[in-house]
Image (cartoon, rainbow, N blue to C red; front, side, top):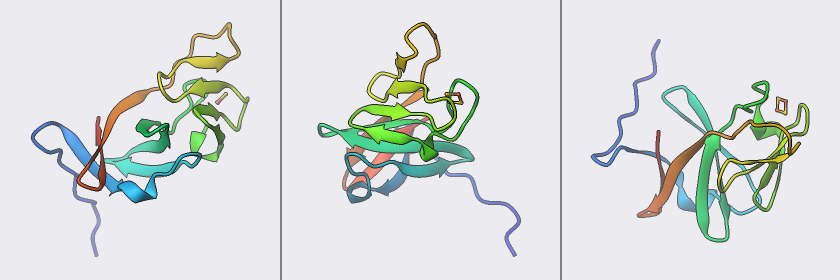
Length: 114
Ligand code: FES
C-alpha cells in the first residue's frame, strides 16, 4: 500500500508535464493536480491557459464554474475572470485576480510552470 504520492519533478526549464494536448479543448475545463496544487487548463484561440482552481474571492472550486470563451464564472458568487490575463471582469469594483501559470504545448503534452 502506497501511503504517499511521489512528488512530480519539473524538467530543466521548470515545466511539469500534465495531460495529453488533445485532452485540453476550447470551451472546456481540464482539472490537473501538480504536487497537491489544483489547476485548471483550457484553450482559447489556439493558446493554452493554466490557472488556479481556487477562486481568489473565497476559495470556491472554479472547476465547478462556467467557462464561456475566455471568461470563467465562479459558482459561488458569480465573480468573472479573464483566463488570458487573470483580470476580474465582474464586479468591476473588486481587485481580485486569478492566479495564472505559464503553460505550453510540447510534443503533444501540456506542460505547466508553477
Ligand atoms: S468564491 Fe468565487 S466569487 Fe466568491
